[in-house]
Image (tube, rainbow, N blue to C red; front, side, top):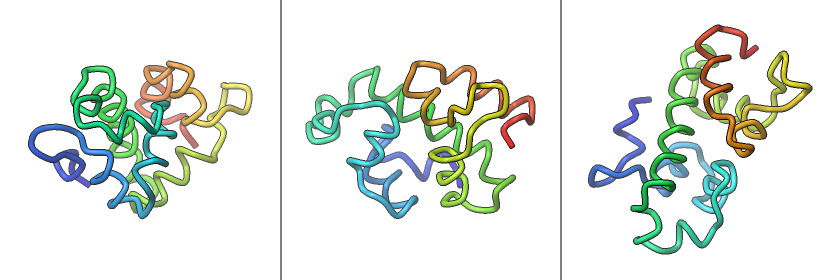
Length: 113
């Protein structure tokens, strides 16, 4: 899926991401390590931190989607599969702990499965 499909008006949209992944915008906020109040207020959606977190989640999913065959399978991997070398932590757990770069490095190195 193209990153542009996760955006609306030039901003990453929690609702567009949720729609693509058959979930709720509240769940997207949680998986991105954001409070659900962030996605309920338009001014908070526009803030740099929120946009960075949504972009990073979209980047991770976009990078692994070809390996898993669909955005839904990539999202399932992100939420539930432990990454080798990270003490059983999933990509989502690492991401929420501020370790998006570690997840992206593992994906780029091909060690995500």
